[in-house]
Length: 349
Length: 250
Ligand code: SF4
Ligand code: SF4
Ligand code: SF4
Ligand code: SF4
Image (cartoon, rainbow over all chains, first blue to last red; front, top):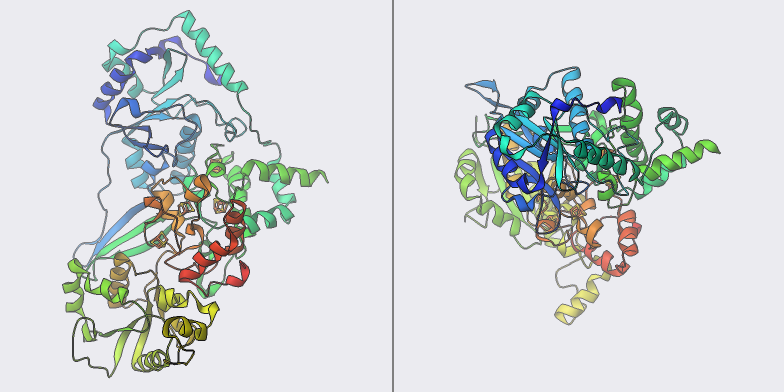
């Protein structure tokens, strides 16, 4: 429990029948976005129109909240003969992200590191600072392996965190904004009682037992290095369609492409940043037609090495948070859990 | 600076790409004002065909006349761009390339006589040097505008080479291939259409043609696993890009 030590002053209880009032009260802190069930059944972070559309418990949304911080396409700068280079406006409208799961909060914390380590990306942090994050607990399914990636809990990165304890949410306050939200909505919260603490502990324990999927992290970077030439890469490369889906849906993939979009005067325009994927052939194509990663197997390998080897040595943890999105979405049914298992098997031989 | 001399031409095709040019309502006046449009039969009579800085050619090379025409255009043009999937991949005129023209003559004209010196539909690059390509059936308006602006700026048009799936994911569509087992060629098809068909619950038919490197074999195997007959898969792939290394899927 050391990581989750709670000072009882920082917790409250939000009875579920008051949840609609709670959501209403959030409007004061920005436009509210939450996992909403679309008519086609997909769970998507969207503006909340009706509280009844919110489904915070579903394991994963199609795209992660990455899309609000680092949108699929962004204008990095604009240019014109008169004004030279100049910044396009950044949308800094106050935004409340409600129902963000621990894996995705950890995903955002990872992106924070990436976007400030060598060069601070101002657009990213302008958006980041306009976000209030209200985390929520979840029920792992057979594709969630956040626990293996040490991403199943959060002790920072949220303003409030709601844990489902039956007919109420156990609310942790993470920041002063969280405090403000509670202070501004006194009628929807009540103090924590012993019974709530018991229910909270119970919920946490149940969740810890609920994991079905697992990836062993021990010496994984070394195993990947040892299995650099493994048939596992070749087999996955033969199956992979280079569709880039795994990168698009990943809360921590941050590669991008840059290109210019011209206006009709052919003198002004914008430099556009667009999500890229290392599974695309052109990702490592350079001048002269040379490609560092010509084969799909080497591109596949790159994705795993970046997340599980390179990121670990640079940032001290894998950049994968175990959200299971790439497993759920890959049309070729390539699973990171199975891949890592196979590679581990190879070492045993 | 003199305005670039431009010609827009059609070979065997439906003229759909030329129509996209005419339909550029908002941008047309700006663009036409910036160029010297010398030949564009669809929009103006009295073409002047001496020299072009840029030729945009739609359609595939099917008849003897097509072949002569595109060679002549090439000889007169500094840059030649293939516009539309027919010009880039052979397109729909090539959908039945594997059947043989005499059989098709027989079916359509009741004779096997080679009336138009027709042969298998070929993309322009099989016949002449092509400097840039813009696929699509028809080409996407937004890509055409950017291509024309790039040319005016003095650059060869280029676009992110990503599959249809990327925009489909950006839109957070439910994946037809993965989730519904539908035939969708999104993973092997060049993007640009903003995932038009999957966004309407219809599998991508590949109208933009394939990307340079695609894994048809794996896509075909996957579709077969989902119970789609090989012949149906082959037919859809052939519709727009007969040349797309069909050997690998048949
Ligand atoms: S690699 Fe896959 S499981 Fe890991 S964070 Fe990215 S999408 Fe989630
Ligand atoms: S989602 Fe699957 S098929 Fe698509 S690029 Fe990733 S690994 Fe390859
Ligand atoms: S529906 Fe088609 S285009 Fe969209 S992600 Fe799935 S395979 Fe790709
Ligand atoms: S989804 Fe496929 S068939 Fe539909 S417009 Fe796009 S490329 Fe063409």
